[in-house]
Image (cartoon, rainbow, N blue to C red; front, side, top):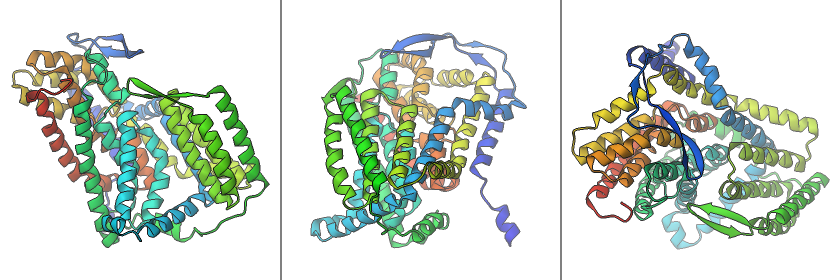
Length: 536
């Protein structure tokens, strides 16, 4: 019986991705090689390498053999920033978790939601439903406005334990942050990394057509959040219906063997941390009295750092009078605030965000009274625990490396464009939509897809009578839904690995929703052809 069960075991994520690398290598033997000429073009103030339409020419392909192994190294070299980002998050949150701050925060949150159920209107709607909806809308907003993606990895270790404690499963946990941000990314409003680049390359007014994109955002989020609420209600009634019920035993066991109610009186190290961070915040307030938060083409000037500094001193003292755990929760909350300010106001990306979480972990450990050696050992333990999630990101990148080295990516792009010729507007748009959904399986980056395809697709749309704004919208919707299941997405494989959700479990769960979203997405594209919409 044990042998039969082993035979039916689904392949490990590493096995699946390596098989895709091998498949990509096989394609390089049969797909003719080809290349587009490329040029450097300034898009919204940033120089980007884009293809030159009409420049496709055949070249000798480079069949890949032993390169399936070297591609793994090259893939890790390409994605070193995300790999180290994940490792630093692992170490930082391990330090945070050892203080029991998250456990205390989750217990306090659950007690708070129970008290809210005393109000009849909230009880009828369901406090949990409100919590899930608000969290997903929040992440969706940031996905739609600033392209939040890699940032969601850090929130998995927060929301999965929260979902488990609320009586749900790890799928609901990652849906709160990862799926929420993904829905916003797919139905982007002002995302500079997708909409901004695509419109810039198309030569149309930046962030035009936002009125209809807002309608798209509302519809997509209503469907996605509704699906999660329906699933969460089923799991709440019968947890064993969860496809990851047995796998989630890790999280349940972890919660059961931790004293969530333990609160420690703050020592000298906690007060020293409070004062030190307060001084740092005060200095930042002096040098950055006003932050210019960028939203699309607009910016809002807010004295957010001085305000945060004042709030820090007030809530910090209140927290320290209660427990060191509550003070460490404050450190986490202020980390999230500075994450938002840094990304929206100062152009932060992986390096700065990873550094921010590293500082969070170290200050949390110091506040809890850890020595330098204990900090180092705990950080290493956290990085070790999350190593599998970090390495799989580089492994997934090897697929693209093989296709590029084989010189067939441009060939696949050109053949797809040629297949659209000779059809009506609706059919051509449908083919383009399918093309983008499939392209996600190879290229997960939204900005890379824009640079690679929009120069060609925008001119193609002129030939068949489709507005360039429609083409941008096709790229936007077509590049969002399958992006949540593509094995080449370092973010997706990282999120699943941290949550300990096997790829096949996530794929089966998300597939019905993905099909619904793809169909609805196409229906939302039809008005751009037949209705006089603003910006189209």
